[in-house]
Amino acid sequence: MGVFARDLHRDNLSADQVAAYWSAMLNAAYSVLEASRGEAELLLKNQSQQKPSYDSVFAKWLQTLAPSDAEVFDVLRHVRGVEVHSTNSSTTFVPKLEEQQQRRQVPDDPTYRAIYASYIAMGMLTHEVTVGTLTYGFTVNAAHRDPKVKALLTRFNQGGARALLGAASDYVRLFADMVASLVTAYQ
Image 1 (cartoon, rainbow, N blue to C red):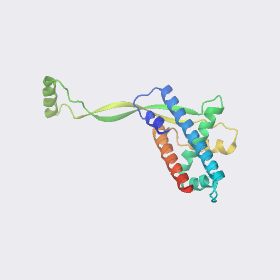
Image 2 (image 1 turned 45 degrees about the vertical axis):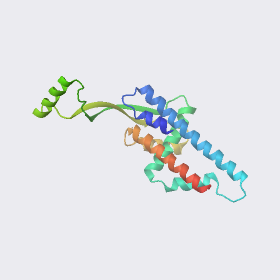
Image 3 (image 1 turned 135 degrees about the horizontal axis):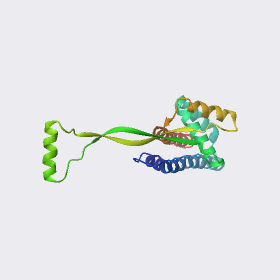
Image 4 (image 1 turned 180 degrees about the horizontal axis):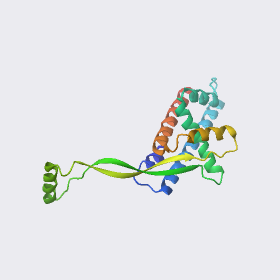
């Protein structure tokens, strides 16, 4: 899951690449959820000690989340379901060009290096240069059969496009926290 989220951080991805990594990340997250559930149920079946059910541990963990984290977690879980089980894409990617400061490369050639140094000394160049980097925001398709899910997705879109990289990073962080919570509950 983290691998796909890291791939989303690569510079200047095409919309198709973003969609592929996004889908892979959402599916990996679903696999983690289902594998966790299966492992917990198997452990409960084979253990003599009384341990809490997966659903109760998961619900308790969800309650510990900040409202914004709980919203991101729920939305992205439902977005994956829409992506897989309908013909409509549930995510619209919104490309945006952001300006970023990067350190200027010092020329390797000694002649150009001397010229570069003199331009820096005269103030004609700076050590940093502004470059455009393509990033993406996203909105979700709020058309859903379940009115609760529809309301959640509609509320999520109210602020406009969300930062794709921020949501992906948050989702990975939340999953790591969830797995740690499950490990603690079943030790």
